[in-house]
Length: 390
Ligand SMILES: *Cc1c(COP(=O)(O)O)cnc(C)c1O
View 1: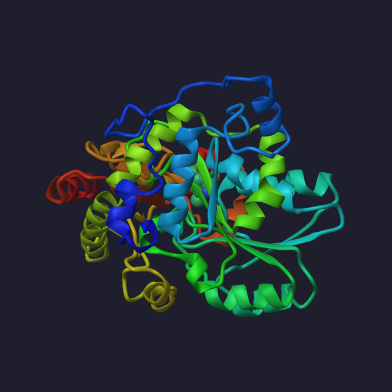
View 2: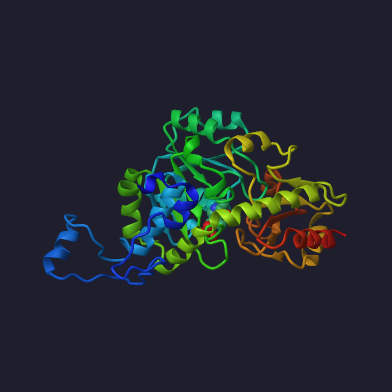
């Protein structure tokens, strides 16, 4: 029955299960363990002969509701929740890779994801090759040889580069790889990577899914067999699971996700056009603008260009800092996906760990500012930018 519900309905009701009390809002089952009427019930649950909860590291009803709602939203068979977005990415990598495996990934990735790939995986004998993810030739060359896993973000953070999901997924599958997409910047509303050939979609639920800057969380949307056979052994024994409290906050976040994402995206489109016409702005990076190199692919694989954009102020770090410090409504932060609009200087915060050459190669210049657009009145945000740029 729930399968036929449309998206807005699934976001409000998907995965819900009521306790015998008949509560309207999802129950927050903040419990580490569960009790059994008789010893043989515990025995049967541990032996896998009976359904039922045992311990919240293994499964928890509130977390399960969040996972089911996410799977319904993403159109995946299943989902597995984790303590943060990084816990989700770590779980996917560690649970599916072995020594001797080869990974091909985009060069432009979230800073901590890059650390997992370039620092952690090589310690365990996994070989990692990074490519310019906007170049079809680069993917083709890297995937001439077999690979176990392919990973990329689209749009990429912070320069909003677009990766052609379908083309890369086809090449990756031909090389024998599992295709993993970090879909954070697109949000589960605006892009559905599974429909374009991806196998696994990963979210930092900390971002738009919570959407109000309250708690960390992560979620992996995948097939039933990937969850059961690959992820669950890792998650249950290693333990980077989502707290029931955070799962409850995220469930409530999902109820308003579509409204928030659509509103913030409409504002981002307005701000991108304003900045593109502004004489003191050197460049605007936003897939919604016709001159963006990924504009045509974005139109094919995204419903709308999303709530995050970036722009170059010109004048290096000094001018970027001046603009940031003059903003009043946009607050300086490294986070994104909040109801409050946030401005980031990637070169000195989220991407500080990279060398100057690596940043230059990725287009993360010293005058680049990333904006995560929130839910304020668009006119107030526009005035704030206009004042800061003056
Ligand atoms: C924030 C973010 C992550 C990490 O998520 P956390 O919840 O902070 O662990 C991974 N990928 C992208 C694209 C992000 O923006």
